[in-house]
Length: 280
Image 1: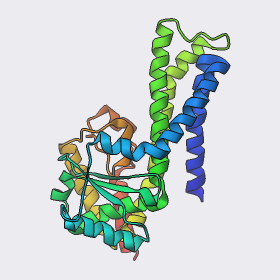
Image 2: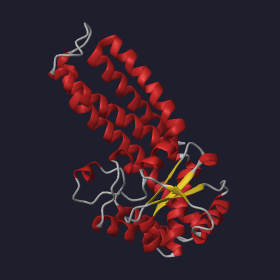
Image 3: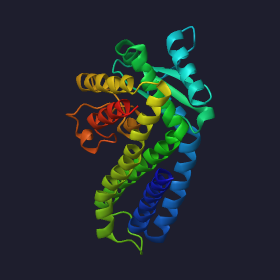
Image 4: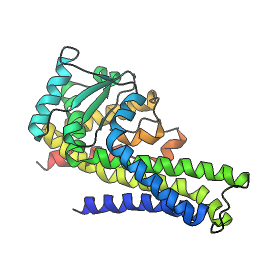
């Protein structure tokens, strides 16, 4: 229950930040517009987030004839987890990674890159799939999509506000130019921090549940180490707004985006998994 309350609070904070931004920059009118924008964004992210993300990465559906081993792993683990069989997609990228998306378990998708199929053993791949199925079971995929969408919207509006201020726009009778300038600078940072907190609070839980689904914490621990090393060598061509969806961050440690990581340190995740193994 604590995680549910925390997520509800964080998503409420993102929506509130959007409304505050609208009020500071455009007064009452701006707040009304921001509220309408928040409603549209939430509705769109609920119904179409999976299609948008899959299209963004040019993901293709995988059938049993395409990859019988992968489909068998997903089906067996979904049955063990008590979940419907998700659709499986392939992302044509060499960087090994994976994510899950969809609005609920009945409409879930598990997507893996070409790189992950050539890097991991079947047991390690099962650990990764178990992690993604845990996200589906916990309904993290919808929560993370909404948080990412709102954060992206806030950053987009902040960019628009900076240009409007430069050219003298947005001066409603209730607006505050100084406050608008501060919001244009600080709102994107706050949005990223809130989005980061939503994602990080879920990864440890998904690791633990995923390891139980797969039946071996060491398999997931080993997979996380391999995926992290490979991502550092060959960073993924990914959109920062969706980076939190992957099992490991797709950017290299040298990227500026890495300063705002949506993932907890892999070392701590691996440590917890190996402590879980010793405690069995």
